[in-house]
Length: 212
Image 1 (cartoon, rainbow, N blue to C red):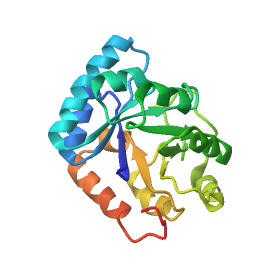
Image 2: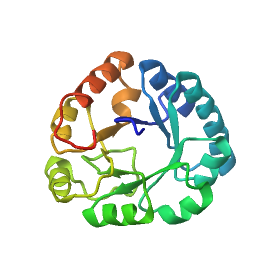
Image 3: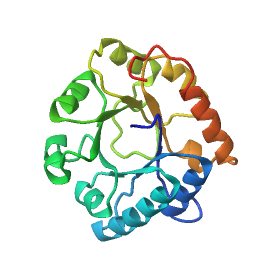
Image 4: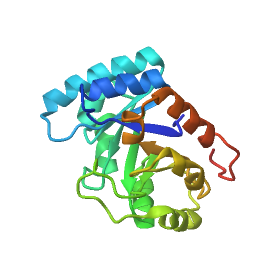
């Protein structure tokens, strides 16, 4: 089961990605994406192994960004691939049929290709500008996501991503997306548990989305 709230890790002002993940888990997040950039594979594997241990303690799922081999070695629940990463079909050959694979998309053509390649869910965005993402694709905003969602007929969970704030969630969910992915809104929240609880409340409100 793919969660409606995805936390994408980032290094906080004090501590590491693991610090941020531990705090997100304590706040109630159940779907964690480890997203470590510009580090050697050995370092990312160490992060992934420990992050997976932390997630297992809390009954949460770990997704590793970019690196299917590391996801497999760490025993993660899945891997997420950006537009510039390897194709979903190649990653599937590496991780097998049991592991969840998510893929980023910016257009309906991207989504169709991801689905054809066997992705389990789509991260659609960016919703707005975000400093956590290099080589940012064109901003979609509410209208862009809504237009794409209105044309989709394929039953696959779509997760809105990119600069999303808690106050955006209700409006975003009106487009018919399955859920949202956030980073800084959780990492830098003063009361993370309260913010996560409020977001889950919005995400679980009645929806016309047939896949929720």
